[in-house]
Length: 639
Image 1 (spheres, one colour):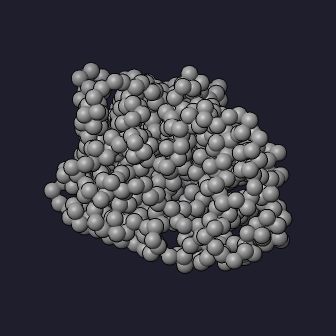
Image 2: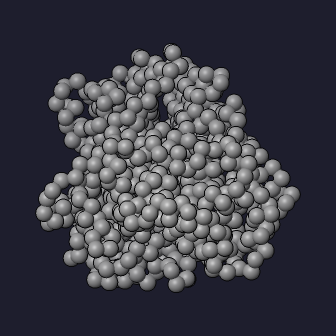
Image 3: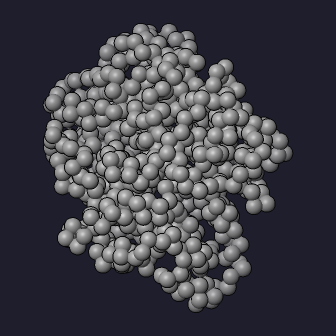
């Protein structure tokens, strides 16, 4: 289903400096994001660079930067604008704009001419872009509403402003010295990512989703504005209204994301989210959809479920089994692509690489859990205020809190006790339920020095809670997860691992119209009688096999124990030595106690701590001790 849209890409730029070798190095660092072509624009003390992954309009007309008819506005763009044809028609009717290409990128250029910074409110799609306005000497950056496409920036002490899709491009400038941001490390060790504008590097920030940034090169001032946010506006309609409307919006979102002049497919996990997307794609396309699944040959993978869905819809199905030995050759590369320590990404990189052999565009079911309360912790969240009434304060502080610090108790038991002990304390309650949290008593033993440099997690998440919604902790928590866990962890990972294989990933559940509608639904349309994602299950009822429709959330994670007893345990013992950890934030003795134990599933969560420590050490040696500007920089050296 073709159109004339510009493809996924990598964008880079500098204001305040002319150095063509720098912009070429910045572009080279993200060659994987656009292996098909590159383009540049230079003006006095302004440089723009672009890497192109060709998907639609494969001709030279799609080469960026693209400019307006007067050549005084230049754009580099990463993303897809699904309503660009309607925009072009509206702009043509004004008789003020002349188009020379059929690309969506040029539609943004003229939308900026017509509406200025407000042009972003007219766009439906996923995007990050940069516009250089040579008349006003301003740089305008924008990021899509949900944060599907990344954008980073930095202002140096010598007055140079840099931006890029990935941080490794910004680090190509010699005056950007890579320095650790302790707060980001603390956040990562607690919840496996760092929320908000902060990155792992001091002085390098993320532009937040739904925001724009204007840099005035004359005054060297940065102005950041929010142009979109999610609001909770619960309506009172019959169940059938929400079911029918969601089905319509989601089907439209899937159809929008079928635009492509290259082969497309879908990630298929076997769960209700990705299965629903594949089902809707199959209805809209008159040929078998190419589907891809990754498994681990473990009882908890979803290979059988995926195969069942594939057979139901008659897809062209492909499977990949990832084993422990794959860690050795992939781990350092994965961290390089992430620009930060990370785990649980190798399987997706590998299955994306498999998909790249036949397709270039992939849809997936990301966002369904966050919008429609698909995680087990969401059951706990809705009961938080009730627990505060059921459990007396004296019992919480006098018994449950002290008992929750007993480290010999199983992780989930301690988590349940902490949940009850903090019931009614919204930020603390959420942190207890956050994915992979490490408890304070463990922090004091694993990284005590870091605690003195960091803001506690409950303070980190506090700004994401709306005080005016204290009566509805459930929706507050869902909003908080979308603004942190979804956009800063899941979407960031999805973009990096797909682009590492030069795959464009599309996310129908995160069409902003679907998201806005989801927050008009009463809570019982999401959770009902202990069943998660009630409304989505009703949408999928006539689409999916009964066993998938009724299937409980399983989750897609590499099992810490399974990996630890294989390659990870050996790697940890090699890297996490007393000598290697001398300049590290980690305490060797604490990690050694875990590594000295005979491998057992009961230490599942402790292995997560070991794994995070390994990831941090690889990242530290690669980015802080290595020289990413060196043309001979070798990723494999850091394993």
